[in-house]
Image (cartoon, rainbow over all chains, first blue to last red; front, side):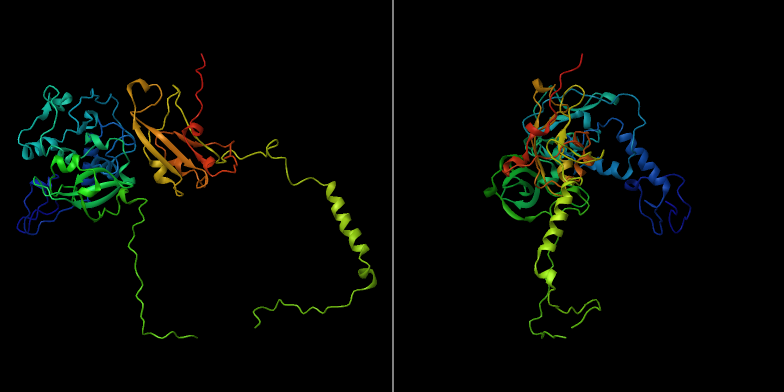
Length: 266
Length: 167
């Protein structure tokens, strides 16, 4: 912030968090134009990547991963970290959700989402500090309704869809907007097709990657038949996203034909 | 309509006596033919003889194994994404615990096919591979065949043969 407000034009001595700062009249904010901000972001991304494995070729989240995008913008080529990365034993948390604790960046989003959406949260963060992990208490299964939304809110590949596991890379599947009459949720989803098969169903996300309408587990996991869904049309993806690769979906501009105009030969 | 000034007007003259008996022209032509018998041949007997190839020649693909003999490919799909001819397709599968020595990562390519008729041997797959799994060999070319099916190379023909450990 280079100028606090019109009444008080002094700059802020340090960087401030945008989510906690109230906008003032005449405030001047420097975002990506300031090298200090970029350095701070690079540092944060480096910290996030300290314990994150280099799993992207295997990870199902690759291509729609927030951490991947962040490290693409701000990450370094190598790592300066010399100690070993955190490794966790795999635990089974039910038939729908696959947990890869080694990929988790401990953002707690799934915990907050489950707290607000499901009637009884069965997972949380256990242990503290370096060894804290997302887990269910004594290998409980996450099977509460609306619990599938923790897959969508997870910014990395720590929580992924077990029914979609290794089926297809994200950028080869084709997303379509679809809806169905659901008694429990809005029924507005994105279905991801491979040929004529539905291989995955997710909630719709807006341009900031936030889920628009949370969907129930029945919509997400049970209805894999195309007849269950009313397809609205292809999902519009961010043009920089890898999901648009190999799709050739550029709009066809139909040339306007002027019927009355006479053809003039030279 | 005249576009250039290069056109020549040729007058057709009647043939002379020597031209009319044809024999000198035949002798001249045979002389050229026979002289070629003693010149260096432009062709080689291909399958037996081979021309020296460039170090960076891009020929038939190979899916490499690591030094433990496990397959490097993890079916990440980046080669198929990079492929401008869309020659590569693959299906991924999860590694079973007893197959740990066969595949390096948790995920492996169950089916990996390259259509050699589509492939243009540009080497972009090699460049895209994050696991150093696919390479284009500089000493082998895709063999010829009469059947189209023979050009779809599966894992049986692409994966590097398993070498016994030297001990």
